[in-house]
Image (cartoon, rainbow, N blue to C red; front, side, top):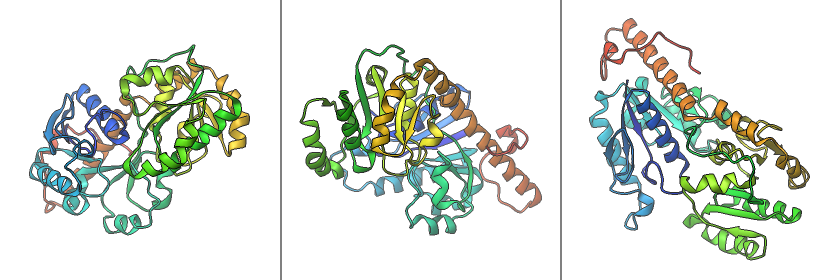
Length: 372
């Protein structure tokens, strides 16, 4: 199958440090190539991939000090995708909804994975206006605010099985916070719980420009006191040690998290998760197996000792069962094939329907399968 993956341009694919969406695009792209598919990645020029790379910006936009507005770069990228759209069986977009107007005529062989929150009221008329654009959610809970949108599947994220090595006897003696510093991510709550129980906390996190005042005024005084260490942004190579040596990952969020990649990164290392019941958490964490789900700070304080006693080998096994990139890629392939089969049925019933891209014979489509 000839597949185009259209990635955000803010970070490279994969990102050098923080960057959930670009990281998932990388894992998916590499796995599809490994499975024998012809994949083209539209991304920043500093991306690294075994697929064919079409550079749509010299470097990741976040790293270019001259870039003030990313929109022009996305417009240029979408024009490049449009010019060669006929070369692909499937166009898989990961850039929110920028492409809807331009690729609306190709809806039958495009798919859009929504990586962000959907509880913003302005999105509802957009999905109504482009109701035939097929969408994939990354958790069932992500759909809640826009349930009438054209969702064709939920596909949970996955990591390469050998990306992060598990540690079954950690020696670090600390709790871990991994991700981004912002009010909704709950680093202040993680500090509160750790200090109350007298357990050190290490924070590996990115601080965006918009959150620098919050970090300086709200979090800075908290990490200035003993017991909390701020490490800063880390990359994939550093995560095995950071997460593997931790007693648990603190995920005390206060927003409708669409997925929460750091949870499965911790599980890959055998590290259990303590999380608030928000967004996708109940779909990702198997309560009492890979972590514990709590409702409040007091509940978190009481429950953390039980999290530390969970079987880390069982945590890793559950990751291998549910959250590998191999499983993710195969689920996306089912979606691709189901959409193309539906398009073939539509064209067969309506011979006047214009045919875009390669022939059905070239695609080697399997019989229609139910969308997962």
